[in-house]
Amino acid sequence: MRKQIAAANWKMNLSWSEAEQLLNDLLSSSYHLSENQQVIISVPAIYIPLAIQKVAEKSGVHIAAQNCYPKANGAFTGEISAPMLASVGVKHIVIGHSERREYFNESDTFLAEKVNATLAIGSTPIFCCGEPLAIREAGTQNEYVAKQIEASLFQLSADEISKVVIAYEPIWAIGTGKTATSDQAQEIHAYIRSVLAKQYGENIAQSISILYGGSVKANNAVEIFSQPDVDGGLVGGASLIVTEFNAIINALK
Image (tube, rainbow, N blue to C red):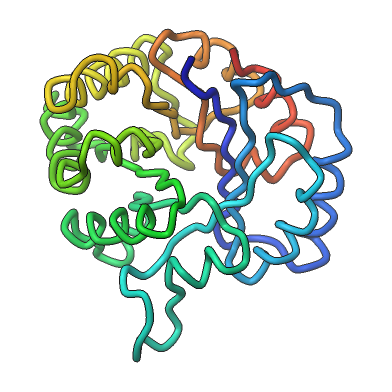
């Protein structure tokens, strides 16, 4: 059975005290995780040690980094490597978020290096892909997303790809209030799975969790997550509100 995942992406938000309070509130809130469900909280790097300490006794809850640099060490001032993240207990790293691609010009090739670096330390890449509005309006979103996946993931062996989580982000629906319909989400999630199946076989494709990452909220999570190829969500703004994110966790199937 595929993992069902509620993943929070705090982005560049919250002070230390606000982050601590949000973690305390979330961890004491009422949600239930079954054996195949996980909560992953992607926090700013400076809060990772605090967050890992907070969730240490909480089964099924993990802390992720929002980024990493592909080199293990060296003269790369300001960057944080995957081995550094592993040394403080990080088991998941978000790779290729649309904001990293857009604002920091991260290429598919560069992201492939980050995926490789993440797997090399035994951590799980949460690989983001997705199309901007112009591509969606042109009806070429399938080809666009397939290219991202092929360029950044198809260097992996079958065993390696099975350790990756994919997050589909309709970029036109992030922070805009727009949301893909549940049918649209299912359609492209099923397509992504078919791309994986063509390269790695149906069994592996069916084992990979694919998350939806476009303005997931408490009032739409149940409908979106009910789709057969949607395995949870990568949640931005709503993950900063305990009641919203708690409802999203409880919407996992």
